[in-house]
Amino acid sequence: MNKSYELVLGEECLSVAAGTSFSELAKKEQEKYSSPILLATLNGVLHELGAPVEEAGELRFLTLRDKAGFQCYERSVILLLLAAQYSLYGKAGKEIWIDYKESGALRCRILGQTRVSREELTRLETAMRELVAAAIPIEKRSVPTREAVRLFEARGMKDKAELFRFRIHSSVNLYRLGGYEDYYYGYMLPDSSYLNAFSLEAYEDGFVLKLPNRRDHMALMSFQPAQKIFEAMETSRENLERQGIETVGALNARAAAGKMKELILCAEAQMEKRIGDLAEKICRRDEVRIVLIAGPSSSGKTTFARRLATQLLALGKTPHAIEVDNYFKNRSDTPRDEKGNYDFEALAALDVDGFNNDLNRLLNGERIELPRFDFIAGERNYRGDYLHCGPSDILLIEGIHCLNEALSFSIPAEKKHKIYVSCLTQLNLDAHNRIPTGDARMLRRIVRDARLRGNDAAESLARWASVSAGEERYIFPNQGNADDVFNSALPYETAALKPYAEALLFGVPETHPSYLEAKRLLKFLSYFLTFPSEDIPATSLVREFIGGSAYGA
Image (cartoon, rainbow, N blue to C red; front, side):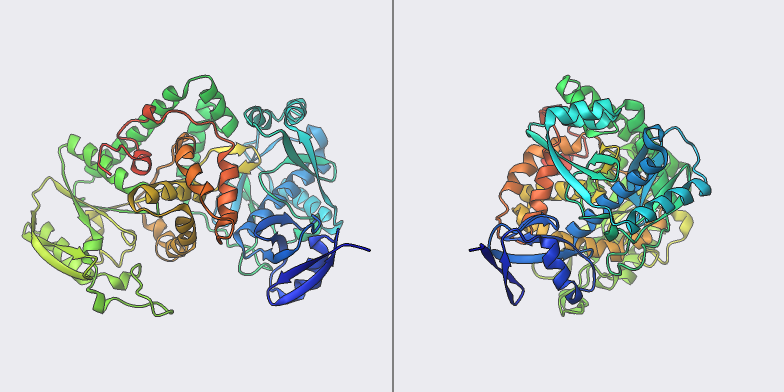
């Protein structure tokens, strides 16, 4: 008698024969989904569609709309790109390096080339589409880790060989599409036919691989790069390249050789110089009296602002911090969102007129009393906090709306300097496995929230979607208004955060909705060697998250 398993899919109950693949089930259910099914979970455990069903339980399908589904598509389309290049040029083809994602597209370079022609990209994209039309299986095989190291050394993929030298896992999963085989951090799609939404476009000295829109799988993301963001990312990448630490394997080699302290001090010196250069730039603009700072969650804005204040002091300025949150309207006047909840992130939640009035009075030399918002009572009050600004005084203001002209509408542009702060990670796992910038910020937040707010990792992960939605709505659309972009990423920070974050992530229950994300982050952290945090200076931006900061908290 053939064995079968009972599965629950939403309100359906399915009886499935042992050995049935998730792909077979997905094909039967696809018409009920508006986006292609790309992965499956069974009892909370993630599975590739090609895997067989081996137990009963609760089944769920993931599509492009789900984070894990989209990441699976992204990894698979990178494999498609590299397989297409291999089909055109074989082993003689130049290596493609996947740098980072910008404006819904993956920034790519061909090593050894300073320009990629339209003809070259057309040829490459045509080869990709031919592989898609052929519906070639993406095959997986597991090999011993030591064999993987030898294999990648033989193929000249030194970045991957170095990555696996520091892995304690006994085996590695490799994926093959056509004649090309590679390693990828995470699950992949069953075959090339799933990868029908992409395009290639020349950009700067390389090109971009445009990805599908998560909300509309038939459309591609609109590629509208922000030049200042691109320049900050390129500067960071070039710095890592000069130091020989473009990948996690190279970083681990430094740690294994006992050279992390040198690397940390170098990274901190570079960051301090960039902050000092910014302070000098601000001072050269004689009329600037207000510095407005904004950026997404856990970008290190607080430490950045304090280090900038120190640099401004050294240049003869007297900085004063003003917290935008103290200009919240009383709770009774706070707007509500579409669900009826208070919308504290909306600009309308702030007394913008009162804020502008106070700033103008300060600029005119008047003495004002600053408000203090009582978050428990939900009311603004005054406690005798007076401020008067002289000719050398400068106001440092941090808040999510600081790059939005509507917040400081009455202040002349020449009196303001706007800075966008973000953690724009440029370190890669290897040439073909990038590290999403959001992962670094997420780990920062998990560690900080546990230390300062008593939140566990499950709670922090559960809130991340809401945090990201607020950033998409209020911060990212205004980043183009910045006079400068400051990249707060440090090459060693994930290794530093690992011992703090790892224990917290292991505490996420298997039944929690954030379990899959916790498990993914744990796998990500497993690639890093760590080191003693005593080597991290008290002024480091990392200290804002792990503790021991010279600036408090």
